[in-house]
Length: 213
Image (cartoon, rainbow, N blue to C red; front, side):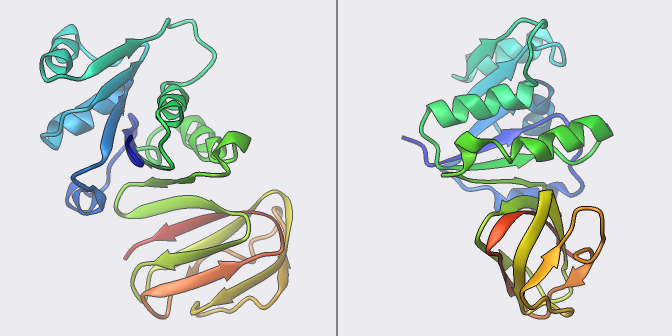
């Protein structure tokens, strides 16, 4: 049973070499419809191609099948995005970690929708993040360790209301049991002083955006 799924959405990838560095040989690769073109450009084959397939060609679909991948096609008249359907499939396979790439560039509505997908109740037991090798986005509900390099940018944005007792370690501008509000910018553009930083809270949910320099 796969432990980690990497889902390729149909957004932008800023740095393909950096993206390669976060991939593992045992990752379960899933293409969310048009995200297939990223896999093709990286010379990778998905185990699953999922979506209404309006962003891929019949030739590409045939190639996925010929390489042993499974194609799961949905109607265009669906309520979910292709990415949500791909996430649902990864969860149904028992994946405990999901990395979503190419979900941060492109249309603003899609970007926001992709970030808000992280707040699904059924994802709480999982480790899930958006990551394109340059930026990673994930939610903090209690504590988190951020791994990167000194000089990386870390922004902490409250989701769904205030976040209480925010405490940071190894960030240039420390927060010491502070309360962050969604309509204020107190948590934006902090800087890592070492290759690791820690954030903890007592109540609420933070969106953590880690930008590697």
